[in-house]
Image 1 (spheres, rainbow, N blue to C red):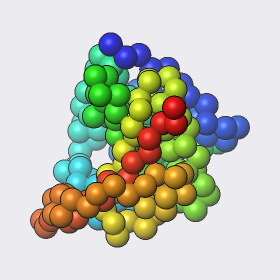
Image 2 (image 1 turned 90 degrees about the vertical axis):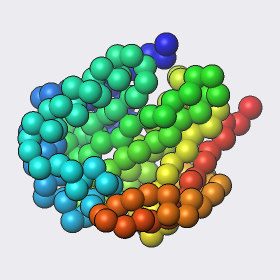
Image 3 (image 1 turned 30 degrees about the vertical axis):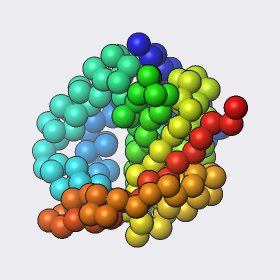
Image 4 (image 1 turned 90 degrees about the horizontal axis):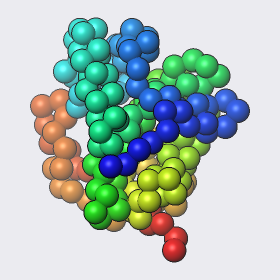
Length: 181
């Protein structure tokens, strides 16, 4: 079973902390404020209506973290909650995983997600012994595509109608980074 650190220091400004309930209230409020910013890319935003849903999701993620299946982290920028990132769809057997993330709109354009994804990718490859890290993103999500490309992820595939968001199908691009041997 894989084990991950509870805290990952990205740099002097950014810290990743495993999901915990002390962030549930601010996370719920941040998602509500960012609903229009996140909804075109993340299907779960459309299903979030009550603070208890955030609590239940956090509870599930804590269990998944403890069992080594999903490593979900809250992103803190200068000690302020700014978003989340997860290492998920982990296959120890095949040494691969995926990254998923979102960022509060007021924190975009500062390089926070680029730095965070870089460290999460390195962490997955070095600490968790992953050989392949993938990011699934809507091709129209220019910010996420830019993060992947900036960090040397290569577009591997386009899944036609690979995502169902807000009552319609969208394409999903798969960006991949392979560990240097």
